[in-house]
Image 1 (cartoon, rainbow, N blue to C red):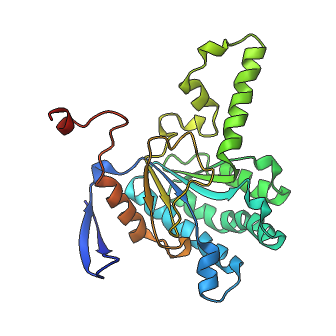
Image 2 (image 1 turned 90 degrees about the horizontal axis):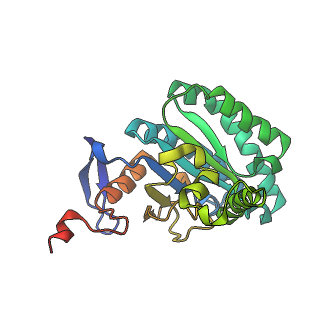
Length: 263
C-alpha cells in the first residue's frame, strides 16, 4: 500500500491515508491550471508561474510513474491559448525546448515514453524539433506514457476525425451506416493508446470546474476531481490525494454495482 499524509482543508487535521495499489487509475489526465494566478499572488510576472509549472510537471511525472500510472496526459497548450499576449505565447513555445532539453535523461532513466497529441505542425520550428527529438529519444522506453496535449483542442480533434471518416465514405471504402464508436475512437489523437485512450481520472487544478475543450470524447466516463491548488503547488501528495478521492468512488459506466443490483 502507498501511504501519504492528508491535511483536511477545513479543520487542518492531518491524517494518514493509504492508496489501494490494485486500484491506481491507468490513465490520468490533468488540466494544469493556475500558473498565472500563482505568480500574481507572489507579485511575479505570469511567466514565472509557467516556469514553476514546468518543474511541477517533472515532479508529477515521476510520481505518477512510481505509483504505477500507465498514461499521464497533460494539457500543456490549447488551440485557444494563441489568444494570449504574444510575450506569454512566445515564452510558452520555448518551454518545451527547455523542458525536454533538461528532462529527457530523467525520462529515460525512469523508463517514461513521450507522446504528443495536437496540431504540432503549427508550432514554431524549434518547438517542433524539441518535441520530435523527445519522442525519438524516449521511443524505446516501455513504462509510463507522458502524453502532452500541445496545440490541442477537443472540438478540432473531433472535426479532424470526422473528416477522415468522411473521406473514406466518399472514396467508397466505408458506408456511413457502418461507422461505430470504435472507429471514431481510433481516428482520435489518442487512438494509438488503444485500451488506455480514455482517462480513468481527470484532475483540474486552481479551483476551476470546466473541461475547457479538453478530451471531450475520451472523458465520457472519467471521474472528475477538482482541486484548489494552483498547478505550481501541485506535488506528489496532491496527486495521491486526488487518486485517493478517485478510489472512494464506484464507477458504474451507466450500469449498476453488484450491491445496487440486490436492492
